[in-house]
Image (cartoon, rainbow, N blue to C red):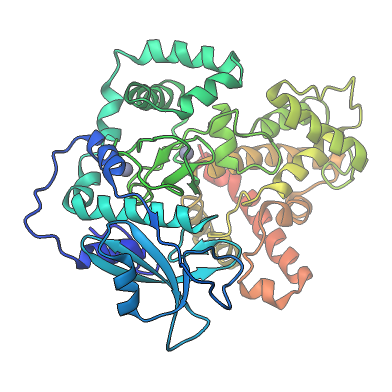
Length: 482
Ligand SMILES: [Zn+2]
Ligand SMILES: [Zn+2]
């Protein structure tokens, strides 16, 4: 396994590897080793230029030695581990190089600046930080290259689920942490080994206890700079480096090495504290965070409409006051499933219907996902009813589980709406027109989107949703749409 995907991404490593350290024993598989190595790594030693250098870029300090040759740089560094200078290229003036002593040789890196300093993908405030991080990376990845390459093969993440003994204790600690002040979260930044293990168990406890609806959800990893030592919650090894040591899931807070993030299963259990809104939140993320089968907006609005609105003329077609609809949205964002949308507050059922449509429209990924969009349109175009039904059923199976469940529930509800067609004047076709563009939108690169013919898009979506609606009853009777 290669540690990084490209040379450009991590230039330190490509050099460390090319040095091919011979005779180095693989280190014992202890998570603490990498931490010790980081402590042992050579520290940067800035070699100042004794003379005034002309044309020194303003973002470099006195470690800049102007136009000098590689050989001259080598002499200045005088074989001191961690010693570094900056120089300007003789052949290409305006190009700058970092010359750094490591492993008894001088390494030269092309240096860039765009407001921050970098030689690879990590961006640094200062040259000192860049060199510190570079030396740590070179040292660890030279000393422990074999160990690092095997790090992900026996992840603690898979075993920790069985650590049932500690679970209750940890859950208690967790519930306490929730009510405590920020002080607790500051302390947890300074992860001790004990903290590390409990955070792993905590995650296992959360995953196993709270997950009634077993929807898969991928983690939402973003590069993260950790303050204080941190350990990967996948492989349990130290996350080395000065900045951008790993990635953190913005939904559940899982911290792992970048290379480990590829192996973590799609078992993200979003943390309610991190999910601030109900509207505009990814559907699967919302239902997993609140541990519900469907978004609570869908259940609440449909319950309310079925209780007092099925016979309302032009249901879903007549629009309610935008301000009142925004009000309902705010109530859900603020109070979640406790939002009060009863007749005493919103006597006009069109406001509730409008709030439901708005929820679907605001989804970052529509209920009928971008991935399945064209497949649904194609399936709905099939003229033979049996074949069409078969095709629709097949595409439905491609939807993420939480999306499928939401769509199924909505279709059963809309079917009930059509049963009152005589009073509400809403048949499958009308509902298709209303819900089409709400439930599905063409992905930006599709032909329909590039045509930029909104009427064509609406017709296609409307047609698809009414065929879905026509199919709903049959699929339901056939037990395919349970
Ligand atoms: Zn996650
Ligand atoms: Zn890891």
